[in-house]
Length: 459
Image (cartoon, rainbow, N blue to C red; front, top):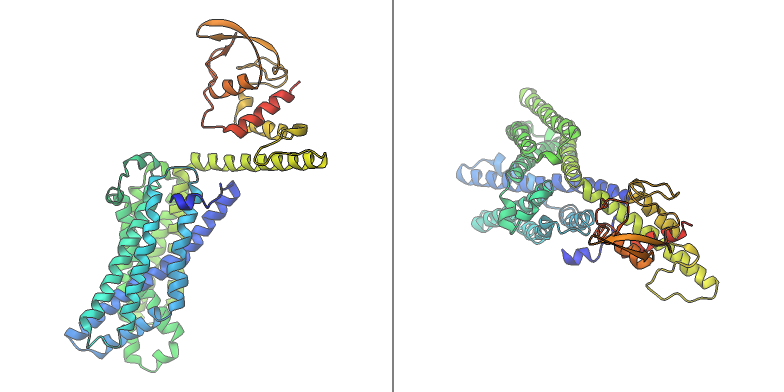
């Protein structure tokens, strides 16, 4: 993750909102596809095994049609299955820019595991035609693909779950510890059931919407596919609300709010609505495939939104600090550019990599920091005595400070101001109590320089 950290920029508040939208879109496209790949592979393996034990042309035909419909397209596997895995690490590193968030370092492990899993799934598809002669090889390829994908996505789910509880990041010493998390286990169980249920609904859509005319020619096979797919989807849909509620109940309180509770209730309600549609399919044989597919996509979208909102709630302080830091960095860059442009116009030379305070270019930045960092809560700029000394006209004055209980006279200069910001209780201004906390780690050197320039301008 150090490599990624070197190639991202500090995100602004608006940029972080854009990242959240991007993450929802990625999950919305990626998770249903991966669920369909894993579910169709597992289902076709079961059908092939069942056909081998009890020969039935419907099993072999359905397995072949399912594999052909979901696994044939290499471009889709690359675009929908592999590419999003390279986007997610950068998104999470941007979110936690400048923070040693222990769980994030495990996200890149998802990429090689998932790629290997998709590779085995591809071998499973390529060997399908010869499955009767190479049955063991064919089934082993499918099993290996499912195992690699399940392990990879369990790591992803566990990482995201750990981001909901920053107070316990220090406990994440290794990958094994990170995976031992009930919150992640319940969420993964929900996704496994959702992927298999989605596979059944996707089969209804593929066979009765995309291939409707073909299915109309064979009513017997059509009835078998509709009842088998609807029954499979129904069985796993019923379990989805249970696991999702367990996931919500084990999510740390700091990550929860009323919106998350409402969205969780919506997920459960939509799952029950899908179950009602599937029951209707079993009752009258008429697939409601398009509506069921739409509702399943809504479940994936809402559950992804819940994850991201929970992460934002748990790390609200960090996100606020990152946004402020980015805004300050932007203001300093603008001030630096303005100073260099003015120096150039005046025929001066500004040394590269430094910020020139020519013409008070840093004063507006310092004023913004004075308000944004909370300085105005204790220090006035109009000479009024407040909790702390007034900043008006203080630069260059002789004042009395108390150091180690002994009063002494000093002149307020840049060195004193810098020291008073980083260690405010070392030299206490006579007549004031040592209430100001240290700003070390809250403001950096460039911000301190801008604040000093602003204080110098307060004549």
